[in-house]
Length: 144
Ligand code: ADP
Image (cartoon, rainbow, N blue to C red; front, top):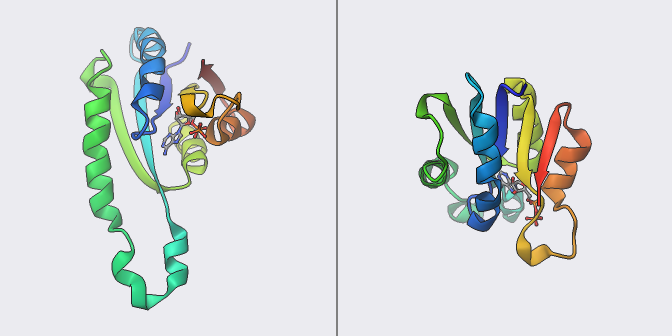
C-alpha cells in the first residue's frame, strides 16, 4: 500500500485543497505512511527579459518562499494528520516539473491532486494535473 504520499497544493486555491482532504486522510490512516505536501511558486522568468534596469521588480524568491511556507502550514493544519508524519516543501518554478521531480526524489507511491480549478469547468484536467497523470511513474489519484 501507499507509504509515501505526495500532495501538491496550489496555495491560492483553497477550494481545490478542500476536495482532497478526505482522500489524503484516508490514505494517511495507514500506519507509517508519510505525507509530503508541496507548494510551487510559479516562476516569472519573463522578468529577466526586462534587463537589469528593472531588477528591482524581480520578486524576492526567498521572501516569497517563506510566506508560501507559512500559507502551506495553515493549509496542512486543516488536515487531520499525525504531525510527525508530515513534511512540507516549497519550491519555485514550474508546478508540474517540480511535482514530478519530487515524486521521483521521495520515491512516492501515490500522488493525490484535484483535477482543476472550479472556474475552469470546461477542462476535465488542468494543465498541471494532466502533465502529472501523463508523466508520473507512480499511481495518481485525481479527485473530482
Ligand atoms: P488549473 O489549470 O485549473 O489550475 P491545475 O492542473 O493547475 O488546474 O491544478 C490541478 C492540481 O495541480 C491542483 O489541485 C494541485 O494539486 C496541483 N497544482 C496546481 N498548481 C500548483 C502549484 N503551484 N503548486 C503545487 N501544486 C499545484
